[in-house]
Image 1 (cartoon, rainbow, N blue to C red):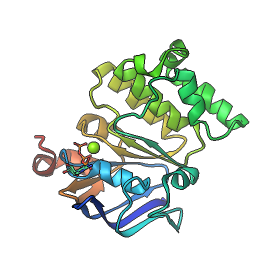
Image 2: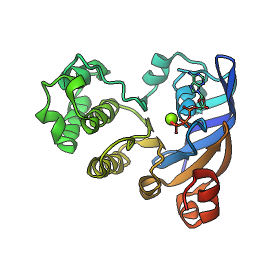
Image 3: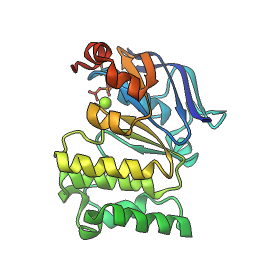
Image 4: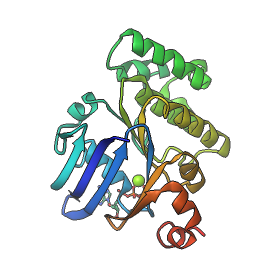
Length: 235
Ligand SMILES: Nc1ncnc2c1ncn2[C@@H]1O[C@H](COP(=O)(O)OP(=O)(O)OP(=O)(O)O)[C@@H](O)[C@H]1O
Ligand SMILES: [Mg+2]
């Protein structure tokens, strides 16, 4: 399978803090790659580094064979990389419909097709179409945030902890949507919910203290209790 994104030994500072100290991973086309690691390990900063929100000071980020490290965020997004941030980033004063429209990069037939598919996928969004984003439940906000990234013609979507703070039934729904999305695009997922991560992930990377420490096929990690205990704090 071909490599869509390659992150090569990136180092990222936030202010004077040396947060990423050598993060490397590859995302293969058509797969779900999962970044795992404890709280504060550097997972969000890795995604933000790709998006140019916290640009790396060294190392390379290669997307479709082209170096993109340090590009402004809008240019990275224009290359077809969607981002679902940890805090969802919904506009509270805008309705669901307006949030979707603001996110829409094109108004072509394909985008309209994707819009119809998204509405089928998340019927709640249609139900609350005219409701302000700020008045949605946590689960609805997460769905809206994911829907915005699915709307555009993205070849890669970065999703940061979509299950965080959600009720199990909503987690299930979010998971189903990622499984469906996998048929259409490639996904880089940060997820602490190991059951979810192991069900939908093909390949994993563990980040610890700002460094990549392990990687492999997801089924290998599922069987490796020592590694799960050491780096993820789960037995
Ligand atoms: N704005 C900031 N200023 C200073 N330190 C920061 C800032 N943002 C993040 N950090 C630190 O960088 C480290 C990595 O944070 P990051 O958010 O990438 O971790 P994470 O793996 O996503 O954690 P979590 O699982 O809690 O979301 C943490 O130690 C965090 O405290
Ligand atoms: Mg995080």
